[in-house]
Amino acid sequence: MSATTAAAARPAVTALSEQAAAAAVTAACRTLALPTVRSQAHEMAQAAARDRLTHSAYLAEVLIAECDDRDARRRLRRVKEAKFPRTKRLEDFDATAIADLPPATLAHLATGAWIDAGEPLVLLGDSGTGKTHLLIALGTAAAEQGRRVRYVTTAALVNELAEAAADHQLSRVVGRYARIDLLCLDEVGYVHLDPQGAELLFQIITEREERASIACASNAPFSEWGATFTDPRLAAAVVDRLTFNAHIINTGTTSYRLRTTRAKKGAAPS
Image (tube, rainbow, N blue to C red; front, side, top):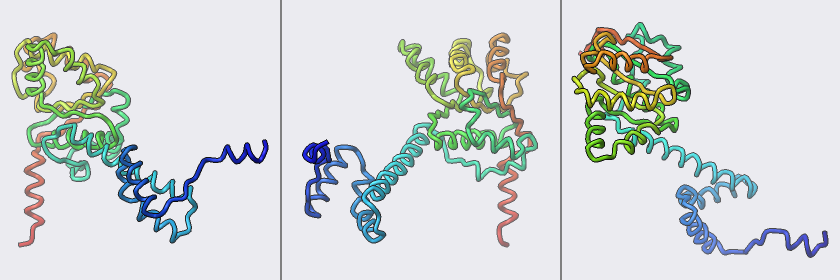
């Protein structure tokens, strides 16, 4: 390769003043949608000069900062899209109060590996025993790991499906729920479903069977789900699909909320 050819192969570099360079960076970052680089490039350039970083090291630093911020924004967006009714986190939950939830099991659930495997999770127990806290907390952990999560009560989901069916939009809504990585279905068994509602809910469950996870919470044992789904065969089919390869946790009968409240009052200074 001749010297002329080698010179032509090198990338062209334009000598810019500091002001022109700053303006060019800002314009390029807007075009490329790099808000973190746009806001931090100048300060990081000064730090890189102080620390005598190479140009490649400086470029790596600003790109890593952009990736980290983009990941953080994505996690926040996933949590917001899940539509949790309130904030609940695993670190705020006293798992020692539930005999059926050893630390190893909770740690495994927190990783979300069961979601990747398409396994169901069923939380059974009386009202106030921590089912919804666990449901939201595990869903939040999954969303923060980048998974698509949706929280909904059984009644709200059935109403949404019924309205979609009336508007001839059922396939679109079912398809949307089918694409979610984790469906957090709360209050299963709290309300009686008419035959149409039960069949619509069954359609969602069947669509996700062995492919995408459903985590559900119920205050009724499986033997009583027939009162919700009316048709015994349909109830049996729902239980069969939600328990196959499932993680089933019994949260018990002692109110978690009452126990937590008493513990806080007992720890409060007199």
